Length: 274
Image (cartoon, rainbow, N blue to C red; front, top):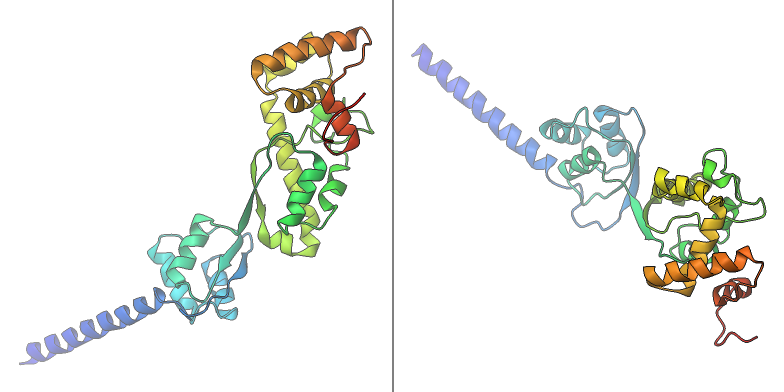
């Protein structure tokens, strides 16, 4: 009789634990407000652990209770895998979804694509139109001297811009830093450095050796490449025209290239006249 009573108590206890776990888990996978459409930028600082992040989420009212986020992190085995950064979060997201984003490092970023042949003014206008930077912030940053970090810029004349050195590609920008006026200047500099780093990586040791062998400066190659980009399309045409232009430069002859006139004018006229 005694054992039956203990078994009954134990069964009730297990059932209570199980029901309690189900209720707790239901909260962990349920958003605080499923009808909300508001999205906020939530920052996770370097070195913050699950308990600190959970406390901040509760403070921002993104979760009903910090314990739900803690449980989600443990369930995903992410205690040591939480990543610092800025994240798009909303009260219509479950704690489990928030934990997964922070563990995977799915930070709030804007993707930008810089096409080949764009001038600095065109990149500046593009970034302004996307609402990432104020007008002129990008141009002001490109006026800085980056030659200490990027030695390939040392043969660039002082009065020459970074035009041709900012490698066209797809880049990511931190949305949270852009929205913070104090950090926006740092973010635009990070972008410029990313583009210069990309250029540096494309400048292979073999290519650098060939430039030295020909007795040319890296700056000369960049200018020539920029002219060819605007003047001709195919690789074979570029090789042919490059040979002609190098010869013209060698004998002091006028280049007579439309691209130089268009660059000087800053706009493309309907027709290039004498």
